Image 1: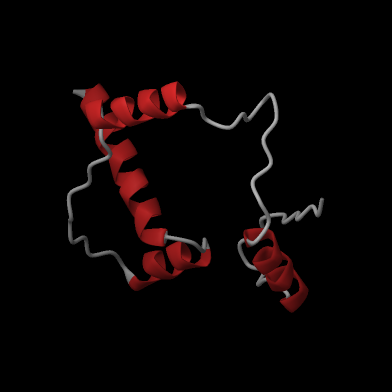
Image 2: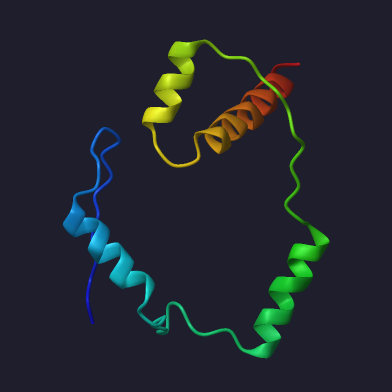
Length: 99
């Protein structure tokens, strides 16, 4: 079994070898063990029921930030817009706790 390891460093780009490793890893079958077992029908039904009971919901929001803030967020990589969303969620929670 091949192991792919990647240490996060927000300012570093993937090398071509790392990109090839990731592409190869995408094609490998899932490996299940006692810590991460394959879902049986009952477990799958429980996950589906839980998601229906409490679905992920988001509401679109336009927020204007400074160009410097946008650049810093983009440097984090990935979905920087989701990072902004999480930060706003936390900020609102902290604000409500201070009321």
